[in-house]
Amino acid sequence: MNWISVAVITSLFVLLLLMKRSGQVSSRAAAEYLRGGALVLDVRSAGEFTAGHLPGAVNLPLSEIETSINRKVKSKEQVVLLYCQSGARSGEARRKLRAMGFEHAFNMGSYRRAERILEVH
Image (cartoon, rainbow, N blue to C red; front, side, top):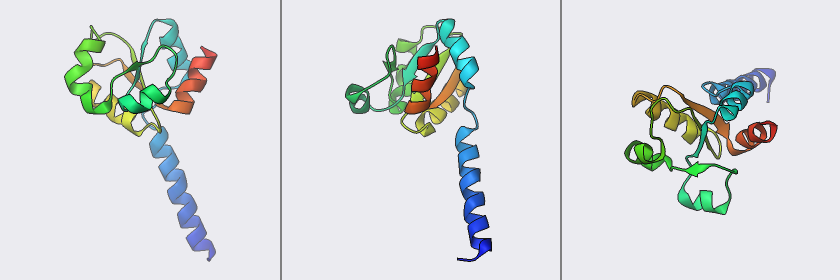
């Protein structure tokens, strides 16, 4: 493999990492929201949630977010912190919730990142 191929592959990898991180709330902001009483939503499937979830998290699978959010969150002013396995579904959940008027919905990203944020809190 020549250096151009290595450079292209490296660039694509870095771009993918940056895209994955974009849209995620900072650890510091998430910790502040938690201290203020933010709701933590796990948007993984019910089976994934049952197999293990973060303390205090409420399960609302991404596939049910638009139909069931009002049963879990009583006010569109409530701060909601979302997580999933990798950060992709929680990013999509954030996008959907924002489109529905939940301006205080934030993506914490992956399970591991959310776990680290909760440990600090």
